[in-house]
Length: 130
Image (cartoon, rainbow, N blue to C red; front, side):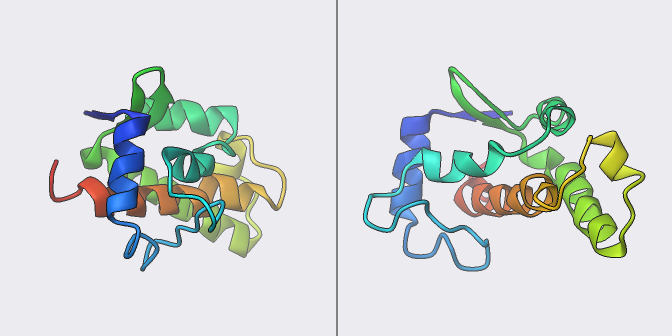
């Protein structure tokens, strides 16, 4: 498992600012401010409690030390995020939607699309280094 402080994450994001959005779906919260960890951590804030528990079980969470993640577990998280999106598009509110207590249209973003963005950015920043 890797732990990156918010300061280090901010620094790494700024160093990759020119290409960070390419193919990741990442959009900073503000274009007139330097990139910071909060621009990425924002994407993790909108999950349901059951999804947050699943993410923590799979090594993706934030605490006082910083952002914890395990690149080896990204495939499991990606599969669940893609399932949330696919089930939503199919109108299926059983399965993943029940498991993760999803109920609103916005849940597709916070528990599906946003998670894919986080994984893509972290893979871009740390995939070859970890």
